[in-house]
Image (tube, rainbow, N blue to C red; front, side, top):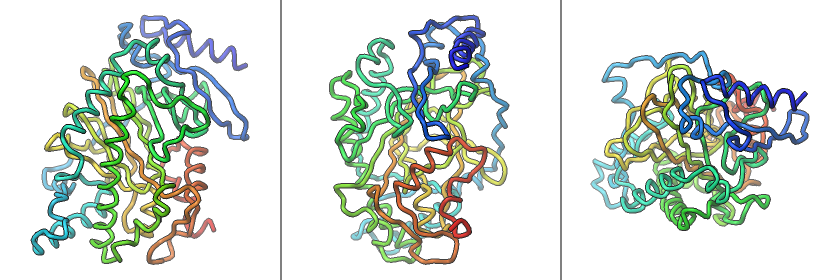
Amino acid sequence: DIATKLADASRCCGEGSITMGEELFHEESFVEEEGGSAAWKAPVVQELVRQGVQRLPERFLRDVPPPSTLDHHELQSLASIDMAKLRSDADPGCRAEELRRLAAGAEAWGMFFVTGHGVAPPVMASVGETLRAFFCLSLEEKRESVGCYSDFDNLGYGQSFVKSVEQKLNWIDRLAMRVHPNQDSLGLRIWPTNPPDFRAVMEKYAEAARRECDRLLEALAEAMTLDRGSFVRNFEPSSEVTMNVRINYYPPCPTPNSAVGITPHTDASTVTVLAQFDGVTGLEVLRRGGWVRVPAPAPRDALLVMVGDLLEIMSDGRVESPWHRAMPCGDRERLSVALFYNPPPRAEVEPVRHAGAYRKVVVDDYVKHCYRVCPTQKKETTNFAKMYNK
C-alpha cells in the first residue's frame, strides 16, 4: 500500500550512509492517470548534501548515456545572436546577416544564445544574488517562506512531474512561480517571502525578458520570410499571456554520472529563456543520437533561448523544440532560471503556413496534455498536435 511504499522510499534515502527524518522531505501533490489527486513525499536534495551523503540513494540512480563529443566546427553552429544588430536602425547588411544566422541557428539546434539584450546587467546580478540567498536559507526557513509544489499547475517548491513512489527522482530542488498574470494560482503560496524582495526582483527580470521574447519572435518570423507579426499576434490580449519562471538548483552530486538533474523533455512553451550563473555547465541536448553539452554562456550575461513545442507548431515543424536534459556536477552547485513564455490559455495556435504537419490546438489543452503525460521516454508530446492525430 501507499504507506508501505512511502516507508520504503524513506529507508532507501538512508542507503547513502545517512537517514533522513520525515521533516527533510518535500510534500508533493500530483494528478493520477485516472484523474484523481494523490500526494507523497520526495527527499530534499539540498538536505541530502548538507547531511553529507556519500553515494546516491537508490531512487536517484540512473543508467545515464554519457555525452558525446562534437568537433569545434559543429559547436560553432550553435549561434550567438547580437540583439543590437537586429534593431531597425542597425546597418542593413549586418542586420540581414544576423537574421540569416538567427534562422539557421534556430533550425539547426532549436536554441541559440542572445547577447546585447535588454536585460540590464544589474537586473541579472540581482536575480543571481536573490536566488543564492533563498537557497542559503535553512529548510525550515524556506518552508515558512513558500508553499509546496503542486503538479496541478506545476508551481511551488519541490520536485516536478513525480507521479509515483517508484519513479526515479531528479537531482534537483526547484521553485516555480507564475509571473503573469500576477494573481496567485489556486491559492498556493508560490512567491517566497524571504528574501523580502524576491518577487520584485523576479518580476523586474521577467518583464525585461518578455520584451526580448517579443523582439525575438518578430525577428525570427522575419528571418523565416514570414510577416513579422506571425508569431507575436498569438500573444493577444497581452494582459492574458502566461509567463512561468522555474528556478533550478542542482546541489553537488557524489556520483554525477549516475544521476540526472532534469529528466529529458521538451518545453510546453513558445520560447524558453534560460539564465545561467557562475559559468557552471550542465544543460545537454540530444543531437544526431548523442547527448551534447551546451557550452557556458559567453559573455556570462548571455541568455539561452530555446524553441518550445508551441513555436514548433506555429512554424509547422520548420523549427523544432529540442529534446534536452540537465546533468548535475560533482563538486559545484548549479543555478539557473527558466522563463516560459506562452500565449493566453484559451488562444488557438496553428501553423502560419500549413505544410500538413500540425493542426490547430488550444494552448491550455496542449499544456495540460504535457503535464498529464510527462515524463516520457522520448519526444512525443508534440504528437498531440500532429495532423495524423486529428
